[in-house]
Image (cartoon, rainbow, N blue to C red; front, side, top):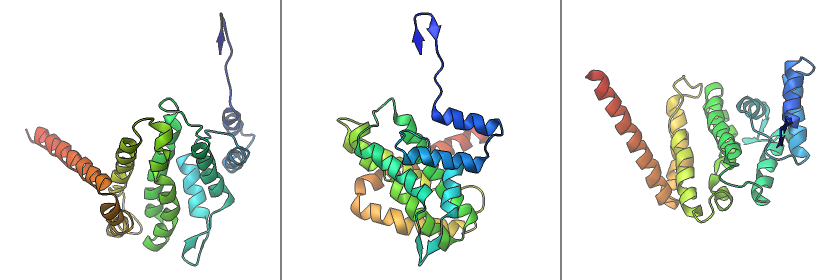
Amino acid sequence: MTRGEIQTPICTSLDVIEHLVCAGNINVEEAREYRTTLRRSGYTFVPVLEDELTHYLLQAPIEDGRLVETAELRAIREAAQRLRLERVLQGPHELVWLNRFTLALVHVVRKVWEVEGSIEAAIRCEWLLGQLDIRAWAPDVAPGAATRFSVMAYAGLLNALCYAPKAGLKGGNESYHRWFDNRVLSEIKETEPEIFDQIVALAVQLFREEGSQSQRVDQ
């Protein structure tokens, strides 16, 4: 904060936790527990880290073909839900949190398929898909353009999920695409054709760009 010629640095609770980790006073697991405590206590905009979410999702038990949501995963889900329902998020300045959250979700989908078999990966990713539907945020982040945001933003996320990681997947690349086609794309094609058309348009654009790059290399 600046007042006249006086500048005062601002530290958040997250900065304190990170400092304690770097200083060796607490370990990574303890830091994760403190972050969960902040979420459960109602602190807003606690970032969801990719490694944090991957750890919690892979540690969650599976019973009778369903993922058992742990207290840590529930804290992440409810913290995001609280922001949305209470309309705390104000676009465009606070979209950084939402963008990082959705990006972490996309990356963790791929991480899960890298280390889990296809059956287990599909079960765990059900939880992630439930958080990835960004359309519910449209009224908060895009005043006057909610419909366009719902189509463009959600199509962009699904387009990112269309591509399996370059690294080999334990569940198999073919299994990944079969799961994604059956679980997501088929339903979107039938129920949300506008979003499906946008996914196709994004894919066409990507192929054209890759084709142009290949031509420049050949030349």
